[in-house]
Image 1: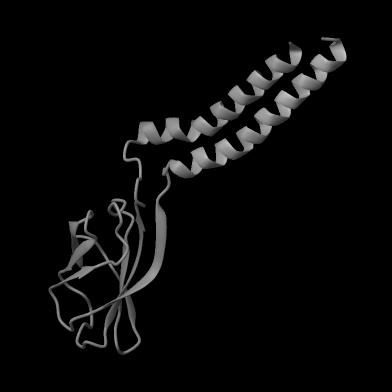
Image 2: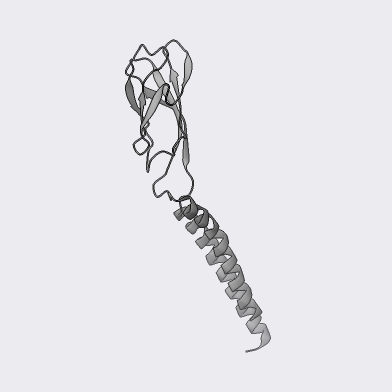
Length: 155
């Protein structure tokens, strides 16, 4: 085999490896869930009196702890931020339940709560160390493909 044919083979292999890598890296990234998702100002109906337990609608694998911000949107047009321990307690982050213990001006079933929070999507990786390692996998995979292709081209 002459040198020209070897170079053409190496370039062909390099192109194949890059194309396969271009497909494999995004698939690998999508398969690893390391980020939480956000919900902003979800409206939750009030029963019209406190105490009452409210549940957010998007829980998936649970809520990120201490990510919630709750407001009372009362029927008279006022909005009041609720404070944990003073106005509500967390019943369970895994189910997205909060116990509203006191809220200013709750007096009607026309009242509602606004919830902003982060939840863990299905397949979320709980361990912070594992999430950090997984975040570097696409970079390592890309580097491995590049080095492998380079070694093939150089012969």
